[in-house]
Structure formats: structure tokens, C-alpha cells
Image (cartoon, rainbow, N blue to C red; front, side, top):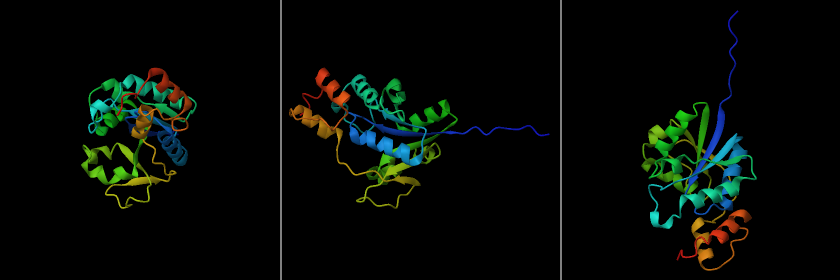
Length: 200
């Protein structure tokens, strides 16, 4: 009789990268909606140490961004934080990061989440053709952007929200409330650590 081989189910994992300076409710909503909508096992929010395109002066210390992320996801078992780019330091390209993650976790299929506004820029991404062999791209559908991408995209509908980290930083600097824009634990952390007071 031939040996019985068991099929081991591959893990289905989402990755939402960003600066998270600070993390806010739109980040969390996108991660949760994609995770639930696609039936993923986990969605990791992955803070960059220094993204290739960011102005380094506008990024607060990674220690604070990581601490706020951990506070933000601790009540949701679907969400977690991936620290690979913080550990590597320097500037990270998505291809290099996902190559390292797939080598570390060969039993995992990755779904890399991007905003609808980023889809048209995919041809300019570093080693995009090789990256497509490592991940499935998930796009957050936005009505103002075309739906004819050059690469295969899994589209997910998420309620529209124009909230951004820069808006939150400006509100803190101006002395305005950010209650209900970020999780309460994150709001208190920003207040306790006196972050973003000199943003403008």
C-alpha cells in the first residue's frame, strides 16, 4: 500500500507596510478588513526603519512607532506586528524584505496590502517582477483610481477614509484633540511621551 501523505495547509498571511508615524484607525481598519475579507490567518503591520522614499527628518524614533503599533494591535488576535525592517535597519526595499520573510517562513503565502493610489506605481517598484513571485498584491479599492493595473491585484473594498498620519501630527502640534482618530492607548502614549509637539 502506498504511504499516506498528509497535506499541510499553508498559512495565509497579510502584510501592511508603512511608516506608522503614528498608527491610526484607518491603518487598523484596512488590516482587519483585508484579513477578514480574504480569510487570512494573520495580518502583520510592518513598520519601516527608513523607507526608500521618505524624508528621514519627519520620522520619529522607531522605538516609539513600534510601541504605538504594539498598543494598537494588542486587543485584536488577527493583527500583529512584524519587526524585520526595524531589526535590519537602514532603508528597506519590499523585495528584499519579502525574500527574507519567505525564506524564513516557507510554509506561508503572503498578501502584500497597498493603497489603490499605489497600484499605478508598481512598475517602478524595485525588482517588481521578482517580487510578484513572492507575494500576492492586495489593492484597497478607491473609486478615483483606474482598475486596469499592469499586474495582478486582488481588490478589497474598504470604507473610504482620508485620515493620515500627517493630519494627526499636525493636530497634536496645534494642540487639537486626536481622540477617536487613534486608539486611546496610542493617544495616551503620544501625550505621555510628548511626541509631535514640534512638528510644524
